[in-house]
Structures are given as structure tokens and as C-alpha cells.
Amino acid sequence: MAADLVRFGVAMDADLLARFDEHLARRGYATRSEALRDLVRAELAAAHVAEGGMAAATLTVVYDHHVKELTERLTEMQHELGERVVSTLHVHLDHDHCLEVIVLRGPAAALQAAADRILATKGVEHGKLVITALPAAEAHEHSRHHDHEAQTHKHPHE
Ligand code: NI
Image 1 (cartoon, rainbow, N blue to C red):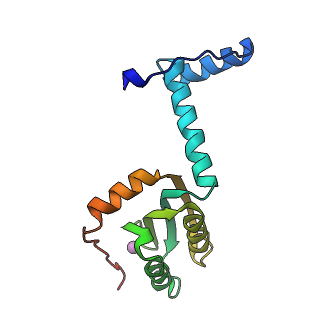
Image 2: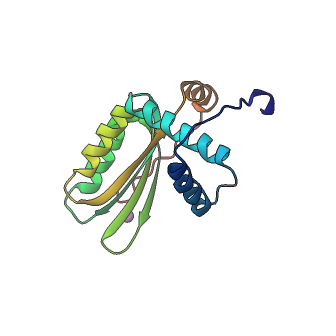
């Protein structure tokens, strides 16, 4: 990788740079270069997602499994998403509550829409979607090598 490194100069307001350096120290960055690389990657990933590119996501939801037919509805929604659901982790949090982490892969807009539907379902108390860019090359590579893997799919309340 070192052979591909390109150095470039950045002109910046001294006050802004001082604030940036303080921020880097708090975050534990060793160098400005490493911090800048992370910022650039984050910006490119955000743009990729905003433009509807391929994405990977985790949707975490907490719900009350006593709500009538909620467990069935959530299972049905995940079946409708088909191969966009990579895996689901289910935890029985306490007597009333379940936590599910749904790992998704697909076009960013479709994942966002699916998450919105699931989060808006009656009985789903709270949750959050974390979405990140899935570069096209990586998605291709992944499907080529791992599509044959069996997915375990359990319906814990059935
Ligand atoms: Ni449960």
C-alpha cells in the first residue's frame, strides 16, 4: 500500500486546525493523516448510501412479544425481504421484551424503507438502523463465494 500513498498539502484556518487537533487527541488518533483518511472514508460511504448504493446494515429492535401477532408480523416482514436478510439474532431480554438484530444487505433505499416499516410496526418499542456502504466489488465477491452458505432461520416464538 505504501507505494500508492500520495502526499498533498491542505491549507486550513489555524483556529480550525487547532480544534481538529484537539478532537484527534480526544479520539486517540496518532496522526492527522489517519484521521483525515477516516473522514474521507466516512464521507464517501455516506455519499454512497445517500445515492442509493449497495449497503450493509444492522437493524436493532426491541419489542413486546405479548402484542398480538407481532412476532408473526415481524417474521413475515423478514420473509418478504428474502435474501436481503442475511441473519437475525434474537434475544429474550426479559419476561415481556425481545431484542432482535437483523443484518441486512441490499440497495440502501430499500433497506431504509424496510427498517422504517419494521420500526413503525405496533408493539415495536424502539430501535435503530445502522447502515454503511457496501462497495460493489465487495458485494460481488461476497455473493460469489458465500451464496451457497445455508442460513439458519429460527422462529423463536413458534
Ligand atoms: Ni424473545
